[in-house]
Image (cartoon, rainbow, N blue to C red; front, side, top):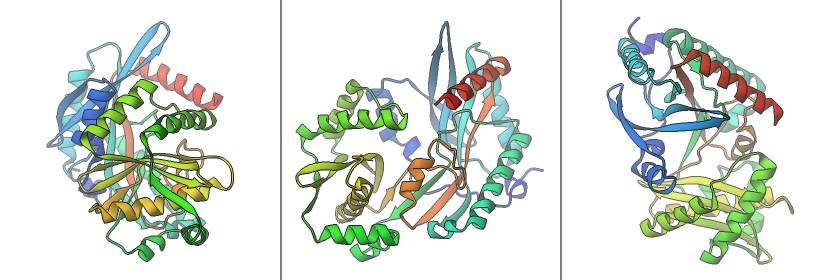
Length: 351
């Protein structure tokens, strides 16, 4: 068997031409803002940058290598050759537990409103489980221990009228947005004074949702970087002059990336975020951007996935959803990897 298309009979094309996770923008942010060293690697006929991810578990400090948005070619023999190369080059250091690959080959594409039928969701889930098993068996990989890494995505094309953009929303969200468009509800770009309020609120929400935001110093450095490069906006929705919905968006290569967002947990604030999204889409289109990348979705029909709550909110928008192959680990140290896998599983059950 030498062809990946015969190994798995689903389309091999990547999700889109734009690659946020391998973009110069993300590499700059990782190296200049988060102060993380980035490294170049040539894999499967393409150049990628990768990061060292570290975890200190007293008294040990272990690390894994991570390259995101890798596209596998059709040549299975080449894939085996490259994986052997990775293992020989990076497997000789004691604390390297694995090389983590986030594979962006397309598993299946479908319009999101179709997914509402249970039989279809179950079919997509079985397809993913089957794919995982085949990938692990063929390439001696493990499904990544970091299950919160996204395995699906959705990109909205913005070359639409206001009414066509509104048609993406489900019936209930569409009614709310139309109602607030005719009322005294404000959508705007946040002022510099409101940036610190955003960060404070973001930290409050993170405690409720069990995620870790970037540090205050990193946030301030990120704001400076965006201001210098003029490639971001912090959008807000205000009701009775009080901010109740926020969203940080990047702008890169004709793409708006819907990066960070949250809403206040009162007055049906969920719907205010939908109002914000509608206005952000229209504003990006009017400023010459062609698409919006919503990022970070859980795989279909995996309700226990850490990103399931994010997906439930985003799936109120009806557009094409792309299920990707997902994240896999090439184990470099079997004993340490097994110990760390047990450690992360125990922490996940605890929370």
